[in-house]
Length: 68
Image (cartoon, rainbow, N blue to C red; front, top):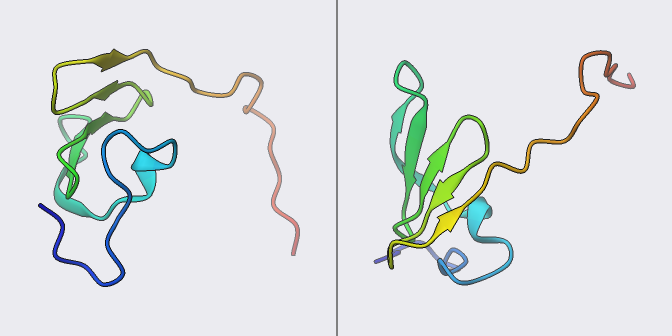
C-alpha cells in the first residue's frame, strides 16, 4: 500500500504509527496511515486485519514542558 521511499513501517511492525498519514480528520479524531492503520487521537488503533489496539496514552502529561 505504501509508495514512500524508504517504505513506511508495515501494520504489524512495532513502529507502525510512524507511517505517513493519507487521510487526517482531527475534527473526528482519527487518521488513516498509508499502512492501513486507523490511528485515533486517544492513541487507540484499528489494524487492517481488524485487530484493536487499546489506547496507550502516557499518564501524567498535563505538566510537560519543552526544553529550549
